[in-house]
Image (cartoon, rainbow, N blue to C red; front, side, top):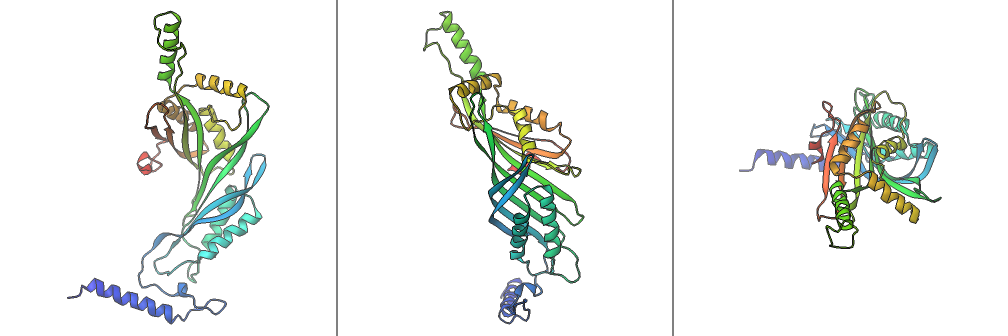
Length: 326
């Protein structure tokens, strides 16, 4: 006996094929527009759209704008239960038009999401789509001055900016940025100095008299959600906070004097991943512009064949949590 649900599936699929082959809906050019047909499965889709759409963008900063960033976009809208599909090309066209006309900032995202909600509606009984989403990922280049010498280089930060506009017109705006720094192990530093003192006093004759504490390249990925009251916010604003918390940022161009200065800087700020977590917590939690935030940290160990890692967050009701990382 054939299962009834399976038979219903076969019948439904047959109806879909028939609709495709004998579509009575036409677009402006007279071609079949299957998307405009009613659906046989009345299920709402929370997010439907496009991933990995590439385009060049310009980004507003505190001093003007930087141009020609190679960005990757993800764009979505919600789909009502009775709808059969959305115009994917319209998502791309609206983003391209906006990117040609204006540089990326907070209002850029608001405008695009409002256009998605109104221009993709395709429903005579609705004025707007319920929800719209967009994310742009790109590498943000900043000139970084050398610590001591009269030189500079380019520092690149992986950035993702995402925004959502829901059916109540609540606008959520988030920036995610990866920041690389150096971390010197306090325990290793202490033992190296202890050894050097013992060697100098003759108590220890092992080695050369010089102990080198282990340091490693480390990184944190910080995601912030802005308060609804914020009218403008720049990537540099977030960078300033991260540098304030963890000043031992990796360098893009160094001469010998810069390398020595970096060694001194690391010796001044030794840290476990726990120390780095608490320092970033202290800085970010003082910011009234930030409604919520979460930071993932990883110290890519030079001593061990494993890494030290941590997750810390603001801790508001309904906000980011470490559970959402895994």
